Image (cartoon, rainbow, N blue to C red; front, side, top):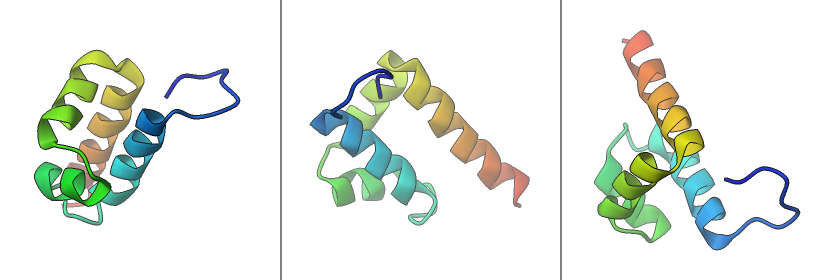
Length: 68
């Protein structure tokens, strides 16, 4: 999820796919990770190491709480 790149990496595409499907899977990390072809620990690693992904992930969860 690096800005300024013309081409997105496979990881960037996977992160986008995860975020797009996360709400549809009722915020279930394992189910969503499996659906995009990564292990749930990979998603947790992205949260730990990628600030932009972490913010978008947290925003998605916040939206879930706000909609309850």
